[in-house]
Amino acid sequence: MRHKPPTVWRLMIAYSLMMAGTSLMVLLAGIIGTGFAPSTDLATLPIALVVVGVASSTLPTGKLLHRFGRRRVFIAYGFVAIAAALLAMQSLVSDTFTGFCLAAFMMGWSGAAGHQYRFAALESVPPEKAAKATSFLLLGGILAAFVGPELAVRGRALFGTEYAGSFLLLAGSYLAGLLIISQYRDTVILENEHSSSGRPLFQILRSHVIILAICAAALGYGIMSFIMTATPISMHAHAGHSLDATKFVIQSHIAAMYLPSLVFAWLAAKIGFKGMLWTGVAVYVACLGIAALNTDFLNYWLALILLGIGWNFLFLSGTNLLPRGYRPEERFRVQSANDFLVFSIQAVASLSSGWFLFHWQWEGVLLACVPLLAGFCLVMWIVARSGTVLEVNRQS
Image (cartoon, rainbow, N blue to C red):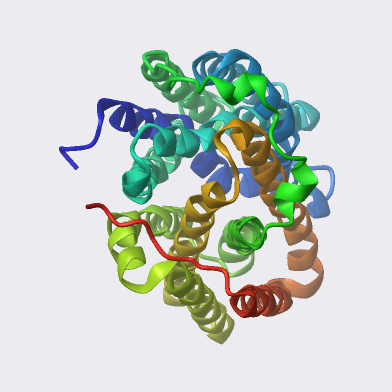
């Protein structure tokens, strides 16, 4: 890791601080919503709106990136994140659920820039090192996995209003990330990037590589978000586990999302992206099986760890496959379209998670994931029959 370019290091640290809000909201949003929302069906609405914010932001963010470059957009979105955290704090103090939901949406909107950090890291190194760069970038999520929940717990009683202090601390995390990302410098723009618009987007999206990349990331995020959104309420409110136990499970889950990044590039070089995708599916199947057995602490813990590992294999494979299907001048359009589709699926999953949980219980949440896995297996079979090559670029 000591040989990583300074740009990748900077992006990794900024990513960990700017994504702390996501892990904080994963832990708190549903719990806050249970006693804050006008209806129990709306308890998961704030965390779902985080994802809706990301999905809504992807296409306009792509246009802004193309016009102004990554650095300016990253800085502007950092200020949006700080404003969102302060609005969430004020909404809790003033007991305004609508304001809290707006703050959640704004966190998601600013988060679209954070998700672009992985493409910035990928483009800052030679192609043969791309898998290692994106893997290293996502290691910042390990820090985020602990920073967010710790801010949530340590700020819980900071003020008279429960959890208001958590969002004040979060604003500090966002500010630190903003200061770091302000040192980022855009990569050199190719001469033909603005002179050529490339192929029509629809033509690009018909590529088997692009289809597989988007489906892999969408499946990874969709199932992960669907189960993760329901977990704090199912575990804390329904199964009666303590907030500390729930926090530990969420922290373990988010750490498990990013720790496999340490070996992802090595594994992908050994078994290829095709093998990584099938392994991700198998891990998700194991996750569903363990979660369905019981609602004991150990079952939640093991299932959520497997959920994180499966997400890593699917999402990183999709991220590294995507550039194989577009030209340099097409990058912003394809990257934003990819994120729009992926995070739209995640938004639908988050929005429907609460409904499934309250009407069909934990078992219903798990069963709903089975058709999604079956559909992805069909896509993998179709791509395999087409003869599409999914080899990994190896570092010489």
